[in-house]
Length: 100
DNA sequence: CAATTGACGTAGT
DNA sequence: CACTACGCCAATT
Image 1: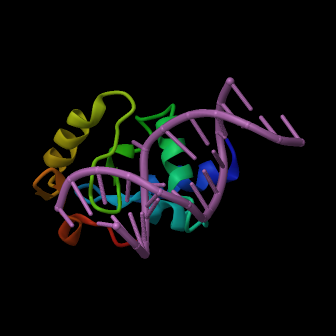
Image 2: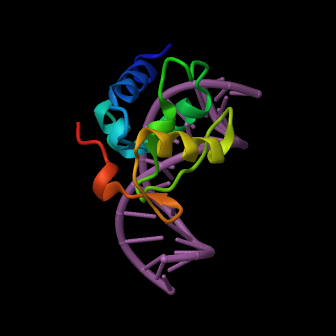
């Protein structure tokens, strides 16, 4: 595990239930403000979906971009179940965005 | 070590 | 708004 990856997963773990964070946010918490893309890479390659709530990570617009194991559909359901507010096809960041 | 890849982000059309 | 064109970064090949 690289230090960066560790920071990223660490940050992701801190996301409270019912809230979501953007890739950019995670990148920032991990110390690389414009590494949003790299963050996605790690999530996609994430071998421990049980340890990291990667379903609480969405795009800056609130769009659900992907979910490695169960697909975007399942991701949406999970968030919905946790109380995340959706605005049409995407998350309503105005309400459900996590402020760390 | 260089090239390729991907769950991004912002600005412009 | 939806779509395109570029910039960015770390992991993999």
